Length: 459
Ligand code: SAM
Ligand code: SF4
Image 1 (cartoon, rainbow, N blue to C red):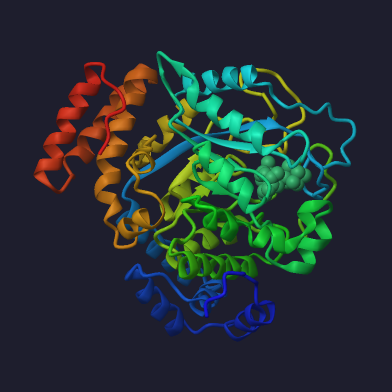
Image 2: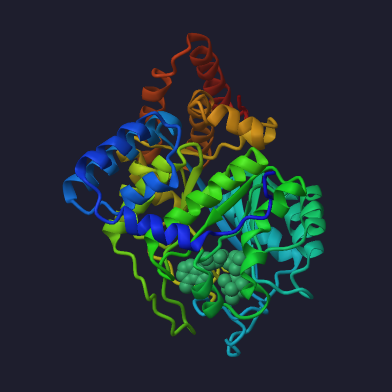
C-alpha cells in the first residue's frame, strides 16, 4: 500500500551520493539525453548530475536545462512581491533575524488597515501577486488573522488594479487549519524544509519548528485538506547542497505519487546575512554550484515552477532566469510593513535592491516576457488539472498569450517611455510566434482592448 507519511531515507541518499561520486562522461550524457525527453529524472540520475564537476559537462547541464525551460515555460517570467505582515515568532531558528532570541527587536503585527496600505503600495508598483509571510506565533499569527489578511489583500481595489493571487508562506499546521486557509482562498502554500538532513535540522531549530516530521509532512497534510498547490524549498547553506537536491526530488516524487500533484513550485533561497544572526553557513554554496543546482532541478522536475528571490544578485538572477527559474520576486522588502517606509530589522538583507521597473527594463533586454498572469488559478487550472497541462508541455500555449496580455497591462499602466517602447516590441515579436492562428488573432484583439482601457483579459 502507498504510504502517505513521507520520510527521507538518509542512508539511501548517502549511498546514491557515494556511488555516483565520480560519474563518467558517458553516464552524464546519457542522463542529459533522458532529460531532454522532459519526463523528469530519478534520484539516482540526479546524483550523477550533482556530482558532475567538469566545466565542459556543467556547461552541457546548463544548456540542456535552458532548452527544457524554454520548451516547457517559453519566455515568460512571472513576478511577485513578498509581504511581511508579522515578525512575532516563537521559534529560534539560528539563521533568521526574527528568531525569538532577538529581544532588541520591536516586533510588529500589521493591523488590517496597514495591510491595505502596503497592498496599495505594491499595486502602485505594478504587482498582481503577493507572497504573504509571517513568523510562527500561536497567539498573534493565528489562522484567523492570516485568513483575515488574505481576504483584506484581495479586497483592496485601486484605479491601477488589484492583487489577483495571494500565495502564503507560513508555519506548518494542522489539516483543520489548512482547511480554514482554503476557505480564505489561499493560493500556493509554500513551506521550506530548510534542510532535509535531520541531525542538522534538529540542531539549527528550536521551538515548535524543531519538529522535523511536522515540517516534512506538512505538504501532505495541506494537500489532504484540499489545498490545490503546494511549494517546497531548501535554505541552501545549511547542509550539503547535493544531498538537499536529491531530497527535494525525492519529496517532489512522493507528492506526485501519493497525491497525483507534484509540488507547484520549488524555491531555492540561499542564506543571507541578517542583523542579529551570528550563524554562518557550514556548507556555503558557490555561485557555480548554485546555478548547477537550479539547472539540475529544472531537468529533474521539469513541470514544476521554480522561484528565485531578491536574496540573489542581479547577475546571478539573470543567469538563473535562463536555465530554469520561472518565477521571481522583485522590488522586495523583508521588513514587516516596510514598503514605502524606512524601517529597520529585515528578516535578512537582500542582494537585488532594484525596483520592479528597473528589473523589467533589464529582463526584456534578454527577450524574456515579464508576466503577471494568474489565469490558471482563476480558471480552475490548479492541482491535477494544471499538472495534466504542464507535464506534456501544453501549458506554454496558454502562458504565452496570457503573459503578453498581462505585460501589456503593465506597460500601459506603469511603464516609463523607454521601457514602454521596448516592451511593446517584445510583445509584437512573441505575438507573431503564437502558433495557432486563431489564438494569435484573439490575442491581438485582446491587446487592442487593453490598449483601449480594458483590463484583466485572459485565456
Ligand atoms: N516563519 C515561516 C517558516 O519559517 O516556515 C515562514 C516564512 S519565513 C518568513 C520564510 C523563509 O525565509 C524561511 O523558510 C527561511 O528559509 C528563509 N530565511 C530565514 N532566514 C533567512 C536568511 N538569513 N537568509 C535567507 N533566507 C532566510
Ligand atoms: Fe520564525 Fe520562520 Fe524566522 Fe524561523 S525562519 S525564526 S520560524 S520567521
